[in-house]
Length: 213
Length: 180
Image (cartoon, helix red, strand yellow):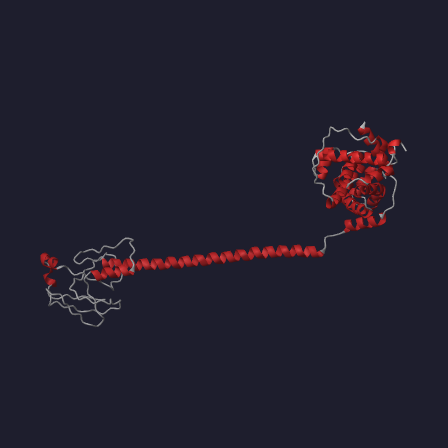
C-alpha cells in the first residue's frame, strides 16, 4: 500500500519535472564549455618543473656530500692505520734490542706485544746500561772491574738522559738475526757471579769497547 | 538523432552533440537538483559540475537500452547535489526509532498536485527531505541511501518515517484530511 503511494507521488513529481522552468540555462552552458576547455595553466606546469628540478638537485648534492664524507673517513682511517703501523714497527725494533741477551748467540724478537715508550724506557732503566753524551768519555765505576774503560763511538741516535756507567758485553749479532739498523744498543752487564763463574770472560776483564748510542 | 548516436558523438567529443544532450536533459535535471538543494544558484552550480562530469566521463558509459542514459545522468546529478548538501549539512546523524509504529498515511498526498507536493516536501528539514527525495521520488533503497549519505540503514529508515510523519502533520494542519 505504502509503496503504491510512494510510486504515485514519484510519478507525479517526475512528470512535473519534465516541464521547463526558468533558470540561467545559457550562462550555465557557457560555464560548462569553459570548464571543459580549460587547460592546466602554465604556472602550474612551471611549478611542477621547479619542484622536480629541486628534488633532483637535492638528491644529487646529498649524494655528493655523502661521497665526500665517506672519502674523508677513509682517508682518516688510512692515516690512523699508517700511524699505528709506524708505532708498532718502532716498538718492535726497540723491544728487539731490549731482548738482546749478552753472551747468547741469538736475539729474541717479540712477536706482537706492544709496549709503550714509557714501558720500554723503564725497562731500560732497570737494566744496567752504558750511556753517554756524544763525544764524552764515560767513566766506568764498577767496583770489581775498576780498570775497565770504554771508548765511545759517535752515532746519531738518541741519548738517554740517565748516565750509567756499566761494564757490558757487546753482543755479537749473528747474521740471519733480524735486526733493523743497529743504532741503538743496550748493554746488559753480567752479574758478578756470572762473570766469575763462567770463567770465560777473561778476555773482557780488562777493557771493553762499547759502542754507545 | 537517436540516443545511441548521441552517446557515440559525445564520446568522440562532438560539441554539437554535447549541446544537444544538454538541451534535452538540462531542464529536468535542473528541477531534480533544485528539489534537493532548494536554491537556484546552488542548482545551477550543481548543473555545471554535473554536466562537466557527464561530458568527461561519457567515454566510460556503455549504453544498455532506452532510459539508461537518463538514469546515468540522474545518478550523477543526484550525487553532485548531495555533495553540495554535504558541504552545508551534517548527515552524520544516528537516529533510531521503533519501526514497529504504524506507517504514516500519505494517501492524501497523492490527491495533491505535483507542485503542492513539492512545496510541502521542500518545507521538510534537510535530512528528512533528502531521505524522502531519495527513497520516495528517486526510488533508491535504504542500503543505497545509507551508502550515499554515509549513515546507517536504520537512520535512513527513521529519517524517512519522521519525514512522512511531518508531511502527515502538515496535511492535517492544512485541512487536507477533509479532502479539500
